[in-house]
Image (cartoon, rainbow, N blue to C red; front, side):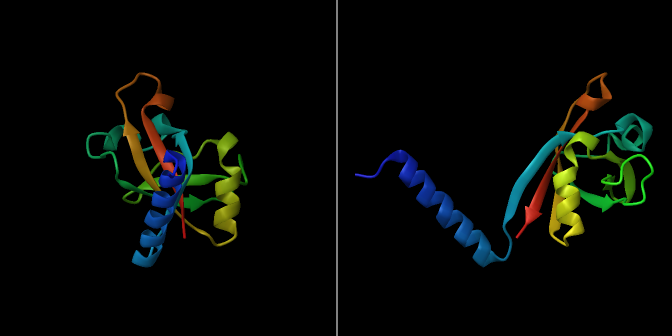
Length: 125
C-alpha cells in the first residue's frame, strides 16, 4: 500500500509532466511585497488592478541605487521594484536569459504601502 506522501509525489510528477507537454511549466521562486509602491503609479492605478494580473519585470542594470534592480510594471506603468534584499536570484536568472514571469498575488487596503501589494515571481521552463 502506498503512503500518502508517495501518492502526492506521483500526482505532482504527473501534473508537471502534463504541464510540460502542454508547453509551459512555471515554478514559483519568489513571493514578496512591492517596494516603492507609494512613489510610483500604484496609487493612481489601484482601482484598475486585479489579483492575478500579469506584471512585467524589467532589469535596470544601470540603476544608481541597486545594480540588481528589477522594475515592476503593470500595463507599461511603473509600480515599483522587487525589494533590494530579495532581488539577487531573480536578477541573476534574468541576466542568464532565463524566462521569468510575475503576477499580482494579493491586493490589500492597508495604510503601510509595503502591505498593499504582494507579487509572485516565476521561472518559466
